[in-house]
Length: 612
Image 1 (spheres, rainbow, N blue to C red):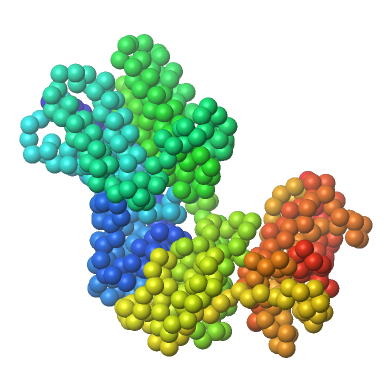
Image 2: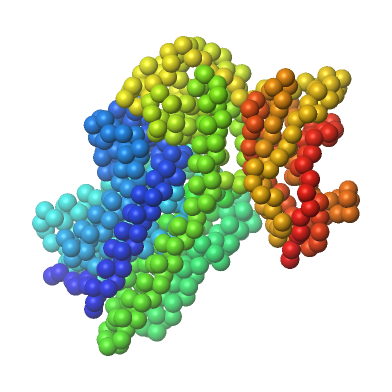
């Protein structure tokens, strides 16, 4: 027997499709923010370098999104087109699965779950697209869309084909075992599959897939080093709820994840009103998986607070509330009030989905700012002929005013962004703490330092990347004098350095908040460069501060920021500042200092008003 999984109207399905189409449009628009960022930039670097798929840790679900991109590179399409294709490939895949659920498997309810999974608890993760967890989740939902309609399971090829999606999903990400177990247990209770032997076979497939995954994972690999739940369970016992990860989760429940407690409350009332034993068991199942999953993630990632990565881990929480919502609550409302409930349900869904998609849009500024910073740095380094550079990580964005952090991925991010215009415009900036070791490696003509490897630059396809064969790496950070007499003479010699604002001076800022301001540093030709090394005892810093009544310090602490790189030509840098908590008139100052030594006679001052 095939169960009906349709709603009273097609409106929920159309809203789900519209949601994915909206995400597709955003993926097209923000293709640079998505593909020239962290892992996807390295993936593109790998495709260019090896002209092969990049399947890590047997996560084969990624082939679906990687293959069109690789074929586009092999076809010689412009890099800008390849980047845009790579960005939309992910959402295109999710949209295709949604349409397959709705029109091939005729399961509109799981199609709605599909749309909810990619917006209900996520917004930052949209800009960190590469994770195999959402890719595997799509395969798992496709499996469930077909299986949940059969009662009992049928002995036919389509059932076997759907079952093969279980190992695909579990190999995509180990956390999807929990998603599979929830789906299996929930449907076992909902459709009372107590005497369905084939259904128990699916459970065996899921558990065996996970066991095989663990067996094939080599000791010391990335997978095993990330499995920290067991060790952390002992390490933090019994103070689990004092971990930063739990604090972050509670805060998320008041902001990004507000739909989670709301739906938990609504579904709890719904199940309690049903009052049957099976309804109460499904209620306990939902709460058990939500609480257990949050505990596992919070203990495993005890100190992790970066939202793009953290939202990705919490994504399966959507399953635990969206499946009961789509498969039980919404059909129950439509059945109880058939005249007006379908339209009301669709209206409520429309409000939620529009709000969540809008939130994805609103989250773009820090990711866009990171790409603007890369563009700015690449434009600045164009003055140097080498095209290959080394940068010290602690010089960059210590106050996290942009998304991302220029560490391992910057070499591929800058290569992709610069080659976007022309293969001859390519540049790369390798970041690392062992700056001397990298400089020694980069002193060999023609070498290219990737994020994890060194290779001859000539191995890169000339259709996309053309480095001159004789160039070596150039350091972008060098050390100022450190002996007191030499440093004092250095400061005195740079009295003519000027600080200016490239934009209109702000008239007011809000009290007690962090803001930013762009400052241009100009150095006379005879004094260039202004050294920027941060690893020395007395680094040259830019400091922002507020003063009352002339030179009386305000209640906000000054904020020092390293020069990001050596200043030759005028360099514009975005600085963080902390406004005073008391409203009033202040003098705002940007100055150069030698940290742990003394201030420079180089300042920029203007009056501002701090408002409540």
